Image 1: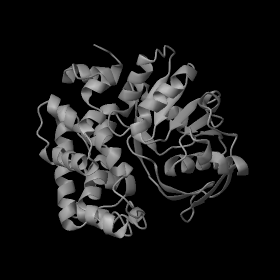
Image 2 (image 1 turned 120 degrees about the vertical axis):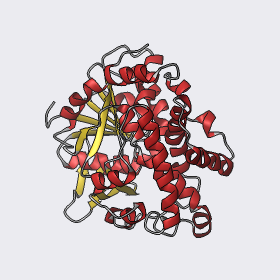
Image 3 (image 1 turned 60 degrees about the vertical axis):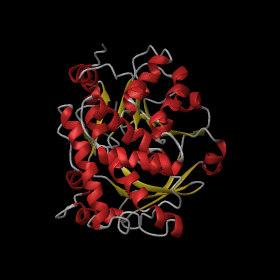
Image 4 (image 1 turned 90 degrees about the vertical axis):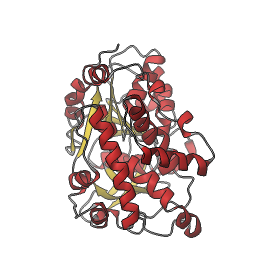
Length: 368
């Protein structure tokens, strides 16, 4: 593939709208899909998206080839399909696109959270997709961005390096080659266990929301989520959760990055501890807290990030009391069972695998 690569972007939220506009401004042919016609009516009326950005960043009016709520139409000509929806919708998107998939397409989840590509691939298999496609996932979302109107988006920051992995890993280079003209920032993420267990949203989002619950509800999110919400005590909790995640990875033979290392990789920021590193991250300036606790930082990140990490821990004998506590608090506050709703190993179809078998599956595609 080359600069003429055709893209489809699925999702018209903060991330999907920004990615669609940026790809179009870079000169790529882009089809933009959202299942709800009202969410993309502004783009259809204008024929594109107005993008604003940080100083020196991409900006201008991005003309789009197609804006549609017809999934078959959206992906028909696409070589690369960017899936930019909450990870709780990955399974539904996989079922929706399955009847329209054609050989040679790449489906890239932005991000996969934990187990996203495994879940997407599993749904494809359940739906009888029998053509050769690649499912891959990014470790985190490349943009800090917001949708600012019916046909407007803003990019606050573009990450400098984002790991990516295909399932199986032996196809990762093929994905990187396909998207390199648009996104040279993506790098080899080893495999989807590495990208899934290097999921920083799992560590930052739910705990930070729950530990700021009173402030979110009383101030309706009128404070800077990271800059004001991360105090020294909150940072210490995040450090414990981070150590547990790294320990789970170690049980699978993976040397996961710590949160400190990730902040250095993604944003080139550092400090003496996690509190200082977060406070030193200029990309977090201006990012406000959720207005409510009914937010994806909990209802997405708990079942789609923390539950699969805790499920791996349970299967392979690792104690994760901090992570279990955050899951439990989320269940209480939202009056739901996130274990039942989440990505357990049973749901991913990998509960029966030993560590060796699991690694062969993600690296080579060998199913037992």
